[in-house]
Each structure stands twice: as C-alpha cells, then as structure tokens.
Image 1: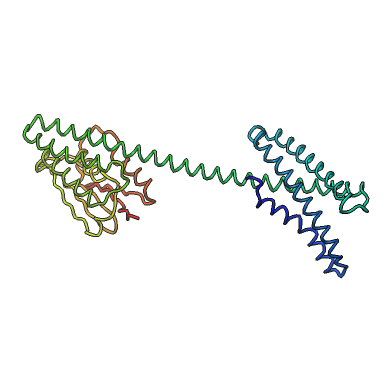
Image 2: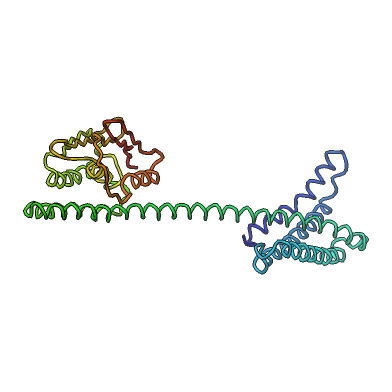
Length: 340
C-alpha cells in the first residue's frame, strides 16, 4: 500500500464531507445555510487539514512498517505508533491552525482554535491508524491465505510426483524378476519377453510425467503386458477385457491397470490346475478389475501397488476407489475421469 493520487483524492473527499454534512443538517433544522464564502472557507480548511494530517500520519505508519514491523514486537511497535503518529498529527494541526488563523480566519481566538483543532487531530489520528492498520492486516491475512494455498498446491504436486516416480522402479523390479525366472526355464521365450519388455517400458517413459492417459492407451499397454504374463504362466492365467466404446476416451492415471493386474497375479496362485482369471470391464462410468481369489501363502511385497493408486486418485478427483473382497473374488473399482 502506497500513498498515491487515488489515496490523496480519498483524503480530499473525506475532508470535504464534514462541512457539507453540517450545512445540510443546519438547513434541515431550519437554520441559515450560510454564505458561499463561508462554505468555501470551511471546505478549504477542512480539506487541507484532512489531507495534510492523513498524509503525515499514514506516511509515519508506512515508515514504521519498514523500520519496526509488527513481527519485531507488538509492545514496541504499539508504543512507537502511538507516540509518532500523535506527535505528527498534533504538530501538523498546530502549523495548520497558525497558518489558517493569519490567512483565512484572522478573527478567531487563536488559543481556543488550536485547542479545538488538537482534539480533532487526535481523533483523526486514531481513526486513521485504525483504518490503515486494518487494511494492512487484512492484506497480510489475504497474502498468508494465498501463500498457504500455493504451498498446499506445491506440496500436493510434489507428493503426486513422488507417487508417480514410485511406479517406474516398481514395474522394472517386478519385470526383471519375471525375466530372471524365464531365463532359467526357456531362453528363447526370455528373448521374446525382453523384446516385449522394451516396447512396454517405452510406454512407461512416454507417459511417466502425465497425470492422466486415456483408457484406450492404457488398454493397448496392458495388452502387451498380459502377453508377457501369458509367456510366463501359460494356461495358468486368463484375461477377459470388455470395455464400452464411450469409456475408452475417459482417463485414468497411467499404469493403473498394470499395477492391478500385476498384483492379481502376484498375490494369487496361477497354475494349470488352479487357473487365475482376471476380468477388466467398464460399467456406470467406472472401471472394474476383478480376479478369482486363491491367495498364495507367502508373497514378498514392496507395498506400492494398491496404496499408490488410492493416493493418486485422491490427488486427482474427489471420488475414491472401491476395494471389495469376498470369499471367492477380489475386485477394485476405479472412477473413470472425464478430460476437461
């Protein structure tokens, strides 16, 4: 906040109001309005007094805010504010009273005039201090709110970036484990697996910085990923995908399906005798990933998968994901996000 032409104009208008209001009240009460000359003198005196004192007091407040801000100590600042603004207002009113006495109102009693003007100056001073500091604290509060909101958004963004960055090493770690298992059993298939893995990881690198991808893009990716799983588990795992055409243009966080499908295979038995069936379908603006439940006894887990998806959705939309488990099945229901 600075003293500029607009602020000076406000001071001038504020100074013109009292004489006009008092004259109107007198006229309303049936008293004499007075001559135009006397009105002009009153307007000039009141406007000059208001502008000079307001300018002086507000200037002192700005100076105090720079040299002795409130954060350095409330008691010290309050003492300095009362002393400096009161001295400034009283000094200026005395100078103005002497000036107007010898120029505009030479017939008035100088001692009485100065005394009355000092009372007016003290009242004006406290009003100006209250208004100016009120505006200052309001602006500081607004700035604090803006800064808090900006910090909150930056914090959320940083957390979201952290969540996204968890996915890439998680995916690579599990894929390399799969590749290691294949090398021991089938070197030719492991070569094909490695080629497919290169194509898949290209997708990961392309979309790692994006918050959302279309469901169609994710489905194309998951088709490649399920091929890798089929190469490892053969007839031990089956995938059934049924997505409505209108839902394919909606969005989900990248690699969400991959995490869910990978978790289903990782935590459940997938063998020829006990095949694992993974269904992916859309309905009512939601995407469901469901598998029959046949848990493994002991599984090493990095703890990323489902919790990561929950947190990413929490940052993106108000809707949360649903996790349902029965005796025979486990399913995760994801809201589909409409691109804006």
